[in-house]
Image (cartoon, rainbow, N blue to C red; front, side, top):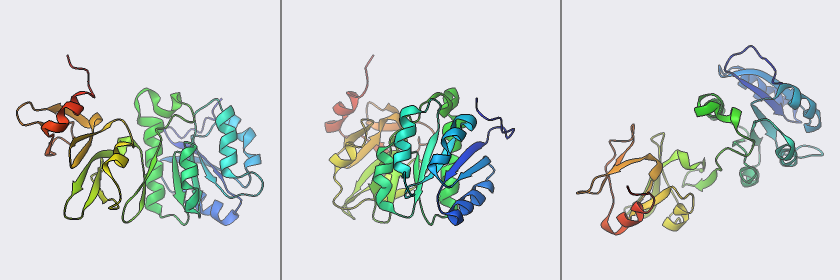
Length: 258
């Protein structure tokens, strides 16, 4: 049975890291966040197994490079045998592990040395997954249930996104590059080598509405017959997006018409 932390709707966190200084720093930083309740620390993945069953944490911050069993190996083991939901956030000083972490359905990847804003953002997303999603969110889903993330390379950084993060993408002739607009309102320019086909391969919900625009149809509310203007769901209903006649038929195929 899950430990009763008496903290209400707060996260119960495990940290596994063989470096005492890094372990203490992350624990101290997490304890300053109001969304975090109990924080349990371990210097080896072999020390975690019994505590996992007794306490049933909401999230594990897991270092990748550890003596003996790596964080990736540990995740492979618990994915096979764990019967309750838990999120895994890998954190490492080495970015080349990022794709391996995402392939294993990790919730996120925190690169050392991290910024407090980055840690705060991950914790807020964890709370949304665990406490605010319909039907109890992560409480009713398995370890591998979070939507898979894709690493999207922009000109400034590597973004880790699920399809829910993407609102639309637009090709800009001035920069000769695609720009991706996220649901948080931010816009990011992609490398010029990024093609529309690469973006469409991200998820089936992404649909081309014109030669220079791709939209996440899960945020689409209606298409006006006369103008082919797309009306998005609030709070995105002030966007001016239009489908072309050429691509409108492909858009229609995404839906069952009454």
